[in-house]
Length: 201
Image (cartoon, rainbow, N blue to C red; front, side, top):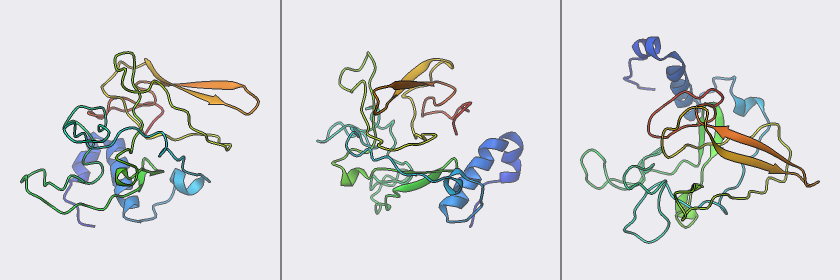
């Protein structure tokens, strides 16, 4: 592994962030560093292909679903690799990088949807009262038991800590319902700027 990041200097200022990034890089290279949630637990991926409604790359001038939050170039077209076919520095054509469906993030293995295999849809974007074009809710059939649910997500903008932004409802076979609100600053926050979350990674 060749890396030019001065980890010794950065680690003094940002120890948890540096450790998380370094571990993610090593795991994605196939290095067994042990101690992560993916190896300790039995898990299964939840299929979101049927409810995904947006892509990573927002191209409003082209047919098909919009990308991310519909903000033009302020999207996820380079996450985690450049799939635009254009070099972002020199603005010249470049070969498309392979789409990595499985990614280890924060010690949790996620399986992402390849938009090219799902009519341009790869993420679930929900709308609030200000966006009537997006659904307010989606229903996903888990059909299994679990002691926890890992989700990879973000808000369209930074939100004041403590505000409940998403309500996850679990409907059981007997008709009972339990609700788990997702709170800004606790479980997730805006995607543009990194912020620590108390119960997220």
